[in-house]
Image (cartoon, rainbow, N blue to C red; front, side):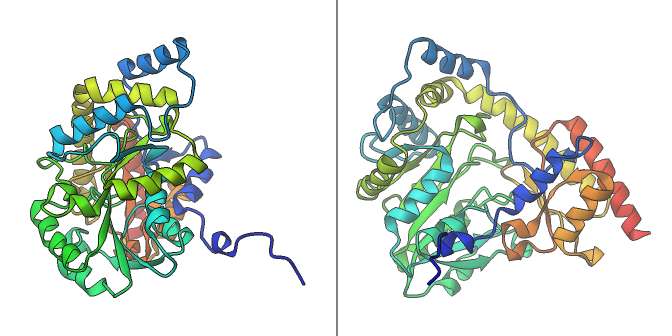
Length: 388
């Protein structure tokens, strides 16, 4: 009898659709990539200095499993200041290796086989695979362009069954740039409480909101006790390579997430944690400056896309736009592949973020205006050829 060497579960999961185009671009020097969701800013110097200083001081040992107490306190201070939410830094905050680890930990800590995880799509590529790896059944909620890809209370209500346990709330959204304002969240929260659901609120783009302040669902009445709030330092502080995130939630859930983290990871990188303390204490001006720069690029990209006749709703969060290319009669993958081959511009097909992304493209504006102008100029030439 043939022995099955590899896990059928992992073999059955498709590789990330983002990596496909990224790998091609790496072999194509003349190409311009607008495909990676990574800030083009360097980590601010005072944050880097703190990381360097920690190394010079020999702070190269493990921290506690939950992370530096000093960092957890600063996160608690930050969330109180920004969202009016109070977390116990000892029992209710866990430092993770990026926000992605926090997502994985929550699913593994809370899901039993067959439990349903509700995942609005288009959304970040990791939710569905992480749910499958935790033996959950992903239930996809297709978000609609006419709603600016926001989740409505009725869409949530229609997706719920007796096996529903967790709702993923991915706002501000990657790849669409959509947000949920307080009124949207209040309507959804009523359904969540009615059906006794728990929420994974991925707020990694919280600081990159361009219309008022970001609102966390955990700040609404009755929601903090049923929400795991996930955030990190990658996007707001340009610290992608430092690999640092965090999760906040009820102590009885965090205890189990910490247990998994303890056995799988031990602790997040020590140097990164010391740098993150500095980021939270003294990084507000850096965040504001980067946000303003992204906002300038956002306005330019949306205007240019509309000028070339590509329908595009106004994204109010993150650093992505999600234009529609249905008029050309091609799949998103075909359009993106031809654009790369013919004009040497890499963007990501909307289907990389779920089937409901068909007919759309994700364009990241986390790039310099110079690169954006050149890439969008090439896109314009491609679109004009298709229409000729």
